[in-house]
Image (cartoon, rainbow, N blue to C red):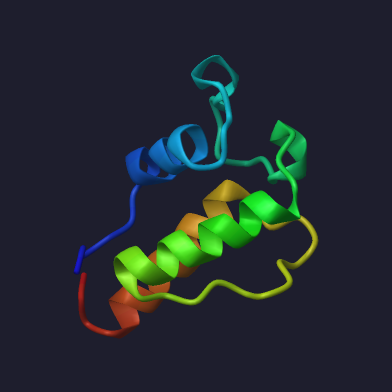
Length: 85
């Protein structure tokens, strides 16, 4: 199991599984899925990816303003709490 889920893994997911064109990848992680044109289905795919790859459950209903940075923080805080980091 990975010790940490990083920006590269998140960006790879956005391109390969969520269908975001590489040229549309955000420069900053301070954006939400809606900000980059992705919908709730893409978020559900991300939930499944994170659960499968690192064993962390993301919230079923993301809170308003749940940015890509917050997603990484959520995942990595959980991994850290488990003693994986």
